[in-house]
Amino acid sequence: MTKDDVLRPLARRRGEAVVVTTMGAVRPWAALSDHPLDFASADSAMGHAADFALGVALAQPRRQVICLNGDGSMLMSLGTLVTITASGATNLVLFVLQNDTYEVTGNQPVPGAGRVDFAGMARAAGFPRVHAFADATAYAAALPSILEDPGPVCVTVKVEPGAEGPLGRGPEEAAAYLRPSLAQSARQLRRALAGPG
Amino acid sequence: MIRARLILDELRAQGVTDVLGVPDNAAKALLDLLATQPAIRVLTVTREGEAFAIAAGLWVGGRTPLVLIQNTGLLESGDALRGTAMRMRVPLVCLVTVRGHARMVARGPAPAAEALDAELLSRPDLDSVALLTEPTLRAWGIPWEVVSSDADLPRLSDAFRRSREREQLVAVLITGETGGP
Image (cartoon, rainbow over all chains, first blue to last red; front, side, top):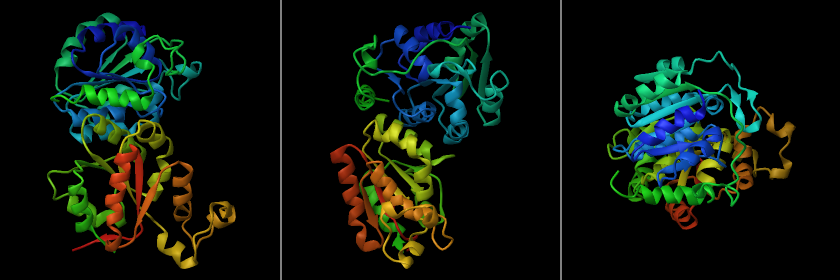
């Protein structure tokens, strides 16, 4: 699967969900979506997109929060799988885009590349719903029900490595919402969420 | 000893909605009290760094989080707090219980950061994490207050005010155990 195979159907169906992206998903998602509830956990701390998304989900229990995490980032904070299930959050959808590499540093292999079973780890951590996809057609067919079911949900998708570099957060970024600082972006999302949540 | 009830009263006065952290002995009395407070959610995390990222998300979502960790966990949290709470400029207070403080004080004045070396940090009569706590906060650009007794608790209020005025993380070092009544 390509990242586009994963992200394009999701962009059509995200509705009013918050979407937190990180690393190699940031620019591909921004190419498909420019929404006030998009947030790039980039120029931040690697490995902390999923727990940041959990915080938003806990604060906004009536709003779905989708996190597009990478496999390298997930490996940095596997404990977060447990924190998510222990938190009681039911509105979080955690994607793990598994390309087996650290894409933004040049596609060096992650530890356990090709062998790590993120879906199995999510089940063992207590996720009530876990889906694993390596086929774009099957993924696209299942996505509507995945987004409708109560969470927390973990969705692992095998994707081809890309060639994304680090985010610059400056005028060189094509998507307007990727240009402000992380602090400004956090305030923009906070304002966007200030209504009923 | 610092009375946990007084800390809790201040957290409630400040509108704290969520407490995130990893338990330690010095915070036990406060955690026991928090467990009786349905209006404040307590979420135990697997590593302290997670607490800062979750707190940032909670604040973005409109809540008023607080982080409660030991100083060992503060050191563990380095890049997480730098890249989330600090870089997002989240107005956030972090209570840090200071393991090893009593032994450090018994030794005499705290050594200057320049005096910290392998010999000092490996001495068995000192807990190196206590020696490193304030120099680390200084290096990371995090202002802090010290609360050693009930009489110091207005500093907790000051920390909340500073965090909101400066839109940043402020630490409060708790140098004794919390207790009751």
